[in-house]
Length: 138
Image 1: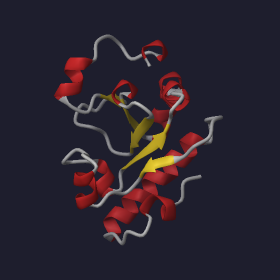
Image 2: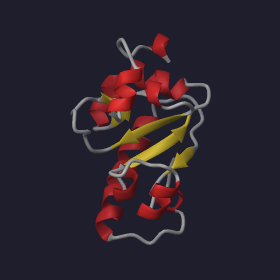
Image 3: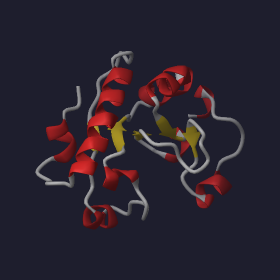
């Protein structure tokens, strides 16, 4: 289970961000109850300064408490997300296309601009990816 203490670390945030994170963690933890592997968060809340320092997107949902990254070196969580997309839908989660993430899975509680359950984060990535997202493409 990923706790708000782990998600925020020592950060003190606006109540709206805290509310967003509470909703996110409820959804993510419920989704992860179905996953049989180990879970370790690699990135939770990011202040704008921290987000900039790690090269995050300018509009990263990590800054609003609506996104989380989970370590996934063996890609088992990414494969689970692809195979169990209906669970992402059930819990209202959106997943960055796992072909765009090397060793983590990015989940967020708000829809991307495309509205797609699996989304490509940028035009640069869209140029690099071809074909449908499948377990075999990971």
